[in-house]
Length: 90
Image (cartoon, rainbow, N blue to C red; front, side, top):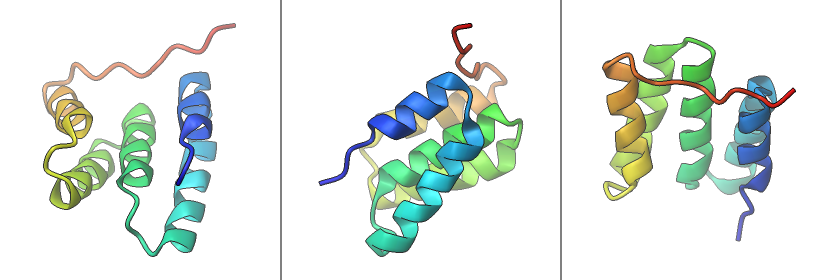
């Protein structure tokens, strides 16, 4: 099983390039069946202002697992311009 703590930690710290790197690495080693990699990639893209890329990744999550509520909520927030990335503690 996969541990997603590094994704969440890097995301919360604002280290979005590290989130993307981890997601890419997981995709290469998991045969592209880990929706959490797509989810966190989507969040990282959203935090970087790459809304179209974010929605593409989050929709990919929902095609794989239609019950992934967090992905649907993230899409709604991005589309309604209410998505707010985490503010890293200083």
